[in-house]
Length: 88
Image (cartoon, rainbow, N blue to C red; front, side, top):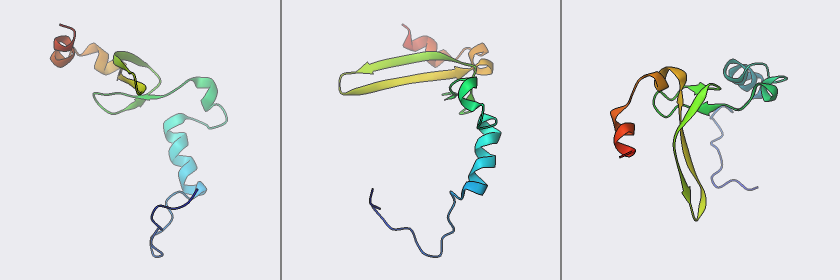
């Protein structure tokens, strides 16, 4: 793979494994067991990552994989009038 644009020389590398691993483990849990815990989705309402999500809408597309919107448990309990209108 080639760079589309070379990074600047004076910019620190932000994907240093020693910096990246603690951030990922805070989000996913220990990386050794993260795959056994199940997938993580991002709530379309509050943007929080969660394993406890519900599909609130989806659309298939002929030219690609389509899209799926998820809601976490706290957001599922709050009724969003925009979602109610989409079902009409």
